[in-house]
Length: 307
Ligand code: PAF
Image (cartoon, rainbow, N blue to C red; front, side):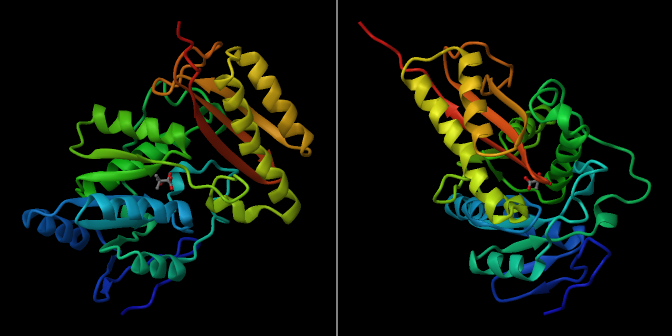
């Protein structure tokens, strides 16, 4: 087994190494060849793209891929193009050894851990932009973020020609952007949405939760409380989005000096802003607690009265 090489902030494994169950690739060709060979043998391949710092949410994606596919490929790549200039690309956690161990425990077959240079050679000039779905919610707060996501995911779909790819609903806007991109660009891959995994107090699992101090961690639990309270209000008949937003804002602000980027109720596919909840919808929010920007969302559906 080869040891990892440090490459500035981005620690990458540039050599191929393998254990009985798992192969780790830093280069494109051998990784693609392993997947193509499995597909020639009639195996169904599942792909779990990640930026590493794996937590229970990622493990649930790997387990879903294991249940639905014969072979599982995971990627670990902290993608620089989806971070803005003032965001946490350098600080983003990169516990590569622990991540590989977690993948091995979950019986992942292949892990792709490319370097930045491998994914973005100096002469690359192409990026993928998904219109409309990226203009609201996190879009205005993170200019260029979804272009970075769509571009890297399109590249990963080409490099690792899997049958299905697994993404968490926690990043709900990202999920809709990837679904649209895969359909528009005719990728022959099924996009599988997996439910958000939460801590016992409701906080959605995220690699960025590690940035929270104990006090901020307590405040963060209020985000899901606000979402669940609003979802319950919708079930009980409240359809007015302005009232629901104000209820959630009060709950979140009562927990501490948090900066709310947005609280929106949107159509579940088009992500268009709603003013009344008259059918299935998604409540989405983004809140900054200290230096940490947290996002979360829940589905809502009004109770239909009969008779
Ligand atoms: O959700 C993530 O971890 C990333 O945005 C993804 C999809 C792996 C692309 O870098």
